Length: 266
Image (cartoon, rainbow, N blue to C red; front, side):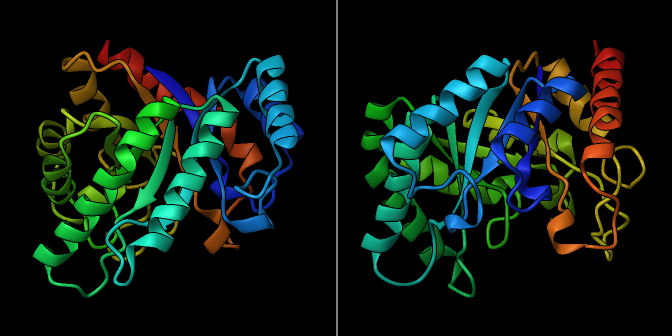
């Protein structure tokens, strides 16, 4: 397995600093948060700017794993704005030479069946475009579709390889699933795995990896036992918790912790 970290933890982190931090801490790749123009990499970049970003990462020996969009596949309302948003981020992802674009479910208070139908319809509609671009659109286990079973229900309706799953271990665990149950449900669709650590079920304040309650060792053990050879991406949500330590000082310890878990599971 290869290791990445998400830039979600530091608002507006410059590209040069992202590359330097990844290289210095040992991470093989990064997940780039793309949320409007508040981030240095976003869907509004020109073709030349995208090429420059891709070249800088390649020259630094760091892979762009994914673009984390904020499109909501199951959101109430018209399809076209959601489809346009997803396609714009698929194009950005392809131009950067990355493999995946993250989307949220975002079904809100819609009935489960209706949210499933909307998400599946939209994801199926963008699948051929993603396939043409060599990109996979990944539905994250999150909000209205927190559990692996929820995401798998939608993805089974889509039935296209260019649409898959992003397994956020915190959300499946908060939804009552253990890794041994989440992985089999997501295995046919799995793009990569997002790991983090938190204080408790009631307090999701982010903690350094290994200092919280999430079943990270069990997750890595399941993945290793099944010989899954993808990416683990550390997401540290400092953006919404200003009181927690800064991301840069935690990167090397996080890399070391994940490496130990991988070694113990080998």
